[in-house]
Image (cartoon, rainbow, N blue to C red):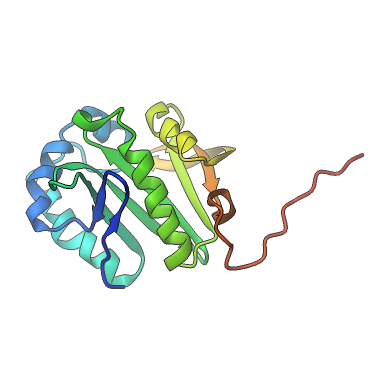
Length: 192
């Protein structure tokens, strides 16, 4: 897929490029980003270069991972967000937010913008969010974006060689007033 740029009321979501390498490197020095995401730790300049020069464009070219920088209109990087195809009709959202830009609702706004795009352009019928149990900041973003929490998956994440439990939640097109691409028949609880 050719890379696309998305906009919201306050943000521009566009694929990260080599010109964003220094900003990605600087943001990724935050211990919270290194603790709660799968980025390498310590995070070195070559990791940022590989991310912006190889991983991001390869994901778009292969139609498997769609990574956006989350920017203010003046091109200030506030964070990054990826949608990764996990199964037909399902994408998983992942994100991090620069510590200087937390608490302003940017990541929630970006998540909703990207989810709408996934539902309308990628034919997704489910966007999943997963985070290690304890990552309350990420959980707050998912909650504010309207995700339905579905539970805890035991030993579902590998974080630097250690298996961890994770929370899982989902967002469906109907949660945003959009149609599904395929019919959905939800489980009905047995009344007995």
